[in-house]
Image (tube, helix red, strand yellow):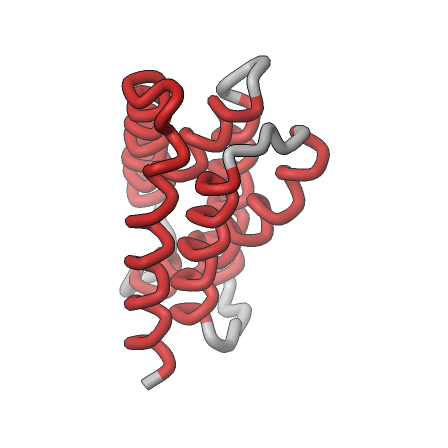
Length: 141
C-alpha cells in the first residue's frame, strides 16, 4: 500500500487518484470475501503484487493513470479479499472503516517517502521486490 503512494507521486498530477482507486477496489474485495465469494491463491497474488509494484517503482517511469489503474485495482481486490477472509463474522462497517483508514495512512506514508527520496525514489523499489519475492516463496511452499 505504501508502494501505491510512491507510484502515485511518480505519475505526477493529482497524487490521490491512484490511492483512491486502491481503496475502492480493496473495499470491493473485502465485500466479496464477506459475501462468501471464494478466491483461490490469495496469498501468492498479494505477494506477487508487492513484486510487481516494487518493479514499477524501480523502473522510475511515470506510468499514466489510465495504464496504472487496472493492475492496481485488480491487486487491491485481492488485498481486500485477504482482509475480508480474516474477518470471523464477515466484514462489518467498523472493520471496513478501520481497514480503509489504515490503508490511507499507508498511502500517505508512500507519498511522503517519495517526496523525501526525490530523485532516489526508485531505490524504494528494491526492498519491495525482495520482500515480495520472499513472501511469494513462503506462500508457494
